[in-house]
Image (cartoon, rainbow, N blue to C red; front, side):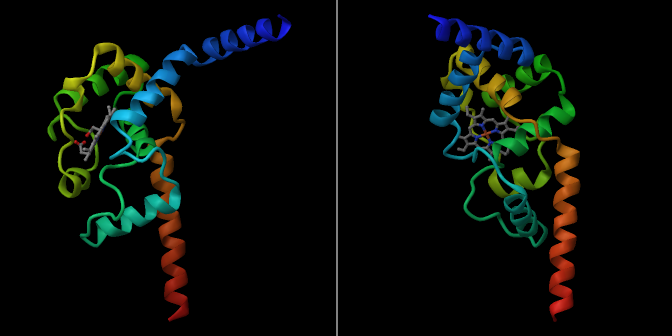
Length: 165
Ligand code: HEC
């Protein structure tokens, strides 16, 4: 009984902090797994990001992925649509009617992977809402910060290469 009460309290606190029902996030994650994970990796670390960046800079399609990883997509969209409301609206609309002209990814994403399929057309409003909220709340990455860090890593790698030759 006490354990239940504590569990309930914790979920209320988490809910209040994040402004979102944890059940919605769980639901969003399972929708991601089912409908998005075959193309979007859940998370790219800085090395994955650098590898993809080096491929793109040398005009090659990044290996082993079919779309930008979800933490990068989430961070990128927050640059343009920072509030939950705008973010969720953007994602719901984009996955239903994707087009390069309204997209906010880097041009290389469309060039190497193509525009994503309108996968949202087969999904309910509730499913789209849940997956969009999950994308918003599951990640804390900040685009400019990631981009700065990947460029620093690139410099380090390149100066190592330079000094060994
Ligand atoms: C068949 C592969 C594929 C699937 C499945 C897929 N995507 Fe994508 N997605 C892509 C590609 C490729 C891009 C980059 C090009 C683009 O933005 O259209 C992308 C980009 C995006 C973007 C960024 C839009 C922009 O350009 O600003 C969002 C948001 C997104 N996907 C959400 C989702 C969600 C949510 C799901 C699951 C419900 C999903 N995707 C399923 C391939 C896919």
